[in-house]
Length: 192
Length: 192
Image 1 (spheres, chains in turn green, orange):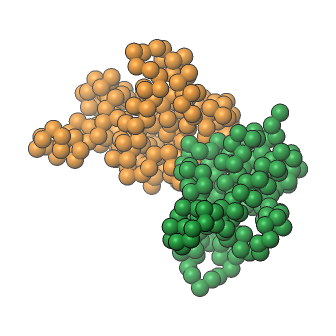
Image 2: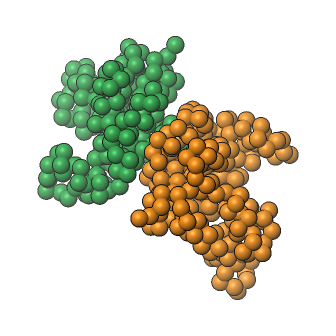
Image 3: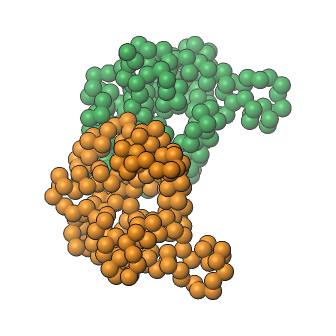
């Protein structure tokens, strides 16, 4: 019997991580996000800050090699992908949990009984939210969002060949801007 | 105060229409689908069977004129689009309701307080379902599904310039194949 796992993909600033944490807390199961980073860091020897960035935003193999002209078939991003792949698989085997980001939906597609969720919201909602949550930066919040989304989508596409944000890839997608974070938590919980 | 309207877009065979009807019945509000066709038929003078097809699958103006070499700026599909546009607007002004298909989400975007839903399911689920619901045809169910989806997406794109099935266009999208029709009904109701 495969474990029941909730995977949450999310647009930057949509509150997907917060929703995942609340769902997990209310269901009494673990939520893996920073923990995942820590484990990856321990295994790989990379700095956590580097992983946070590269583990979801960098492209491996072909693309980066084409640009860097390095001969190696595997670069840091590919190496991290393999470690994350193994850790996510192990976590899902350990028991029911929530996993935020990191292409867990794809990695676990045949390995767990997944509820695949995608959280999104319009740019205005997200811009206000990231300034409130993460503070001001030199770059405008809209620019930060566009940049992050673009890189997440490219990363997802590169490693999974699935289109990020296409309804057909998920069991449900929720607009946290129009529905509210609490309602999203409630719906996901009701499907567990 | 704008009326609360639930619009349901759906992949062919996903059960979106059934879900819409059940939601409406349980909420005690009308569901417009065949009624809408009848009204359009009455107004336009077209046969209902023709409208059922053209009203959601035919492309108007530029494209068809390019192929037909007719000089007219408006063809039958454009004419139908205008009538459907007006009827959907009037229905939404009359009171809360569920509207299935016909780009109602786009038409009502500034005119009603919409809950925009998209229902989809994998091809196996839908193939079994359409044979059960609509019977066997000469064409394989998979071929029927591909053909209908393709035309619905093209129609939607042509008249709305929105991408059909992109999570970002909806408040929620639900996979009726993995969640089940009853659960979809329950979630939509809980958001009304």
